Image (cartoon, rainbow, N blue to C red; front, top):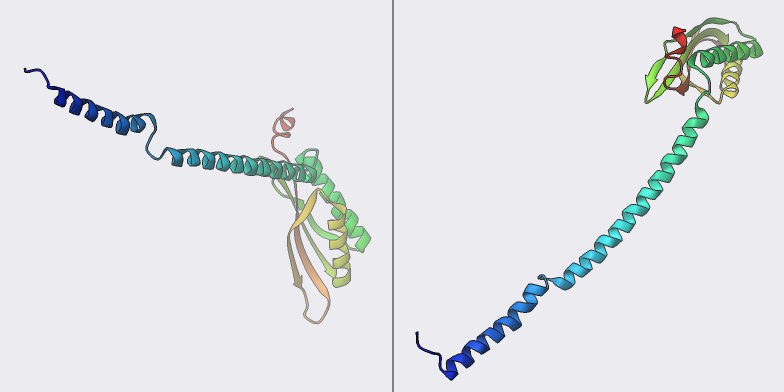
Length: 181
């Protein structure tokens, strides 16, 4: 191999300098470097928005849990069923009615809770029926009318046949061991 001339060495040096000037920033800074900084800011802003939304949702869940807890009967399903039966008997007495059928139904599981239904049947004139329904609903903040069916027994009178179902909720498993003792 022959030695390079001064001119060739200058050209090789210039080429290496140009390559360094062009290539070095490409090696040190990723393509679109300014865009990446903006993207990082955007990602940070999105993260803050998601954190704020998560905090809002958690607060909403906490409020819902408090609302659900305030509507749960604190005792057992058996106690709640007895309370609903007593409330129905009291409402019937206040309205001047006699209940023809009052029956606790099997307890159902529902989302970690126990759903406690009671079925009530009676015949009544319209004013007493309204009074009875008012008294039943007024008496229980821990249970609600779940189903209601009113049927006219005679189209020429105000006599009604009433079928309703009350439902209340208790926490999940409190009776599973109590019934075995």
